[in-house]
Image 1 (cartoon, one colour):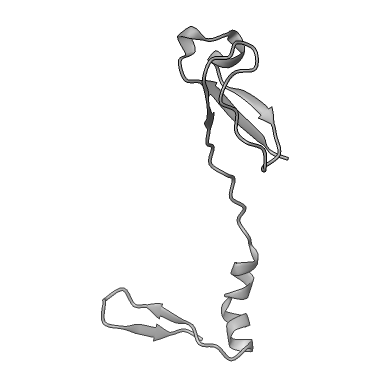
Image 2 (image 1 turned 60 degrees about the horizontal axis):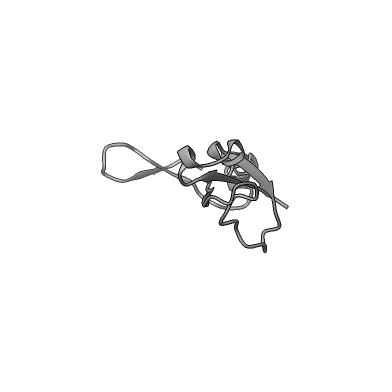
Length: 88
């Protein structure tokens, strides 16, 4: 179950619990909260970016030796805009 962050819509007219950002442990299927549980003032859920995990397996899969072993050819841009050079 993830943590969800909430903050008061009007921090000046709210309690110390919701005037700054706070987290709530909820199921993904639970409805989001609309009001602070302590003072009842309206709150909104804050969306955060999810962390991305880099998979290092692509570097091995697309290596020149691995492509050649499996019968593929790799083309690399010459940089002149006139086509590609075959590497493998």
